[in-house]
Length: 312
Image 1 (tube, rainbow, N blue to C red):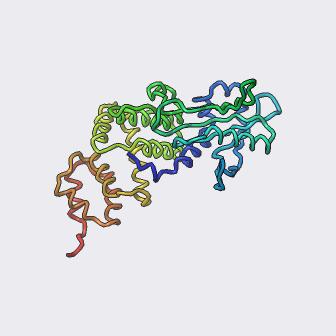
Image 2: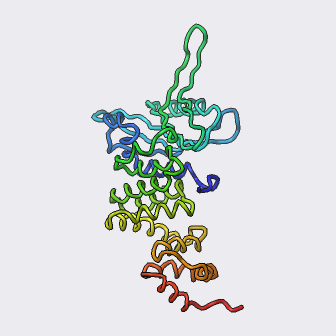
């Protein structure tokens, strides 16, 4: 599993929603689509406010101004990705609401995407204040709690946001390889431009990174697909993995090359794997490019025989 501490959750979710804002609305808030002008979306600069009862500053993650369909009036979407449970979070959302309303004097549609894995009980989605004799305040926000959604319900959506966020929904341990396959199948059929395809495939891998045994099951499922579909999926996977390898943006370059080799030539003998692990950075990068031309294990062995070994 990916290290949660090293992931910029807010940044990833913000980029996902900004890139696919209309698709996000269609997937999770279809009732809103009917009264929003799709050509009017403007993302506003991030707002910084003091957090509740502390000096530290907090940033509102995503603020979009949109126009009501066939009207000249506007409102705001305030969307907060929340990657960990937090005490009094609903109070913070109300404070943000008040400050945004004061500044812009526009209606505000507040949305929270709860993306943490646990707990799974329903998160609070309102902030109330009242007395025995009357209710002073009832503030509500739309809560999208991914760990309470079943990934199977989103299989047929044909929506890039679904392809990405299925990775954070309810997934049984034994279903992880299948979910990753289904996410990538959906991505392959969407036929997006290369940059968006790259972002989504990396998002999927970030939140559904498979262990070695899961990777084998994933590959076995891929191998059972029809040729065209299998090639489309593997082209997507290999493209971003190799780009990350060549640019030096991925850790564990040797492990990544071994994974790619396994897909190309099958089982790698232990002594050959030892030779690969002895290669330096430049040689690993060269192997990462050369393996695209390999047909079987003999091509790998022949390539290694031509590599100059470091002298003892």
